[in-house]
Image 1 (cartoon, rainbow, N blue to C red):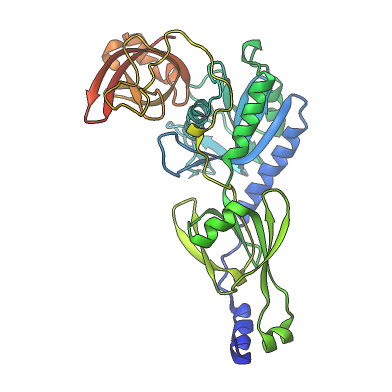
Image 2 (tube, rainbow, N blue to C red; image 1 turned 90 degrees about the horizontal axis):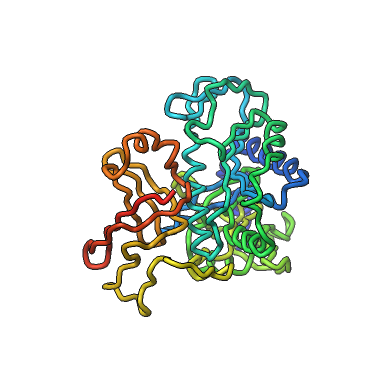
Amino acid sequence: MGWLANYRWLSSLREQDLPPVDHAKRAATKAERRVAKRVRKHPAVLHVHHAVRLTKIEGGKGRREVDLIVVMKDRILLIEVKHFNGKITMDDRGVLHQNGINRGWSFSKLDDASKRLRDTMQLAGIHVEKMEIHSILAISGKASVEDSVSTGGRLMDAHVAKNTDDLMKILKRSAGSDAVFGKKHLKAIRTFFDHCGTWDSLVANNGAQREGDVRSSVFADGWRERFQKLVFKNERGWWASLLFGPLFRAHATDWNGKHTVLDVRPQQEIELIAAGGKSAAYRFDHLSSLSFGYRTFPDWAGMKLMKARKQTNSPSKKLEGGDLNQPPHKKGDIVRSATVSNVDERYGVFFTLDAQNSGLYRKDRMEQAEWDMREGLYRVGDSMPVKVLKVKRKGPSGWNIEVVSED
């Protein structure tokens, strides 16, 4: 760089096109951290994980974020923290409103998170048969929560906390001795959440923070594997930068806490895909820091976090080498931890059986009373044993599997 180019670069720093500060998001994050801090002090709480993102075992990189996941000795709590003021209501579809404005949230989001959690834990070898997973909507702020705000058809494993004091009272309730985790179980659960990760995060020079997924590239993937956080800085003053050019560096901290200094081109860009799917590019000299939310995308199927239990009448295993002609389940198999994936008004209840297969409990096989009570009996994310009734070939590599609830 010549001195004229250096001057232009210095001048560009005064005309940075920076994203605006999202004050509502900042307040919401602070509220989540305040709630997490208080929850950690509860004597029955073992671990609190903030902004955890859960994958789907069916594949893809789409993830659902949960504000707080709390591990207790007898259950796991999925907590959505809403920092609201004003009048809070819920419509007939179970969607939350603030001062009459639709906030686009319902308990179905935590139902889906519960399903993802059970499925991926089971895929990673964690025993989930008797695991209690509870959903909580926790209101933070000066809000008037109307009686319309409820858990709907969800019974003992979903709650509304109108304030943090209510939340602490919910934590005092026992889920029962049958659900108590052992030491090996708790160790496996802790390891599981350590692998989940959270959002990648960029902080601009004006303090604005943007979260999402850093788009894959040669240097970005290399950084992700090595570093958890990078702080950007020009280490030369104004006059030295004018004469000799900027000395732009990233002070990087790796996943083990060790520090490294890297030379970085200040006008190089990194692309972030935000939670809503929009992408934007940011120059390094417009950023103060970059943090990666996860080191590698977890291979849940490749993890075995607990020893397998010996089971009788268990699902059939595929032949070695993955014989496509071998059905994944046979008639009479009991799948002990199937999860409800969808309640279809036309066909019946769909269950996730494993990472590749689903089963249908047909509507016409149910008693009328059972179908009428479907919202309470079969909620997305619920885990229950099902028995395989029929297995038929579907296409070159798929299977139609009919099941019936064993509960």
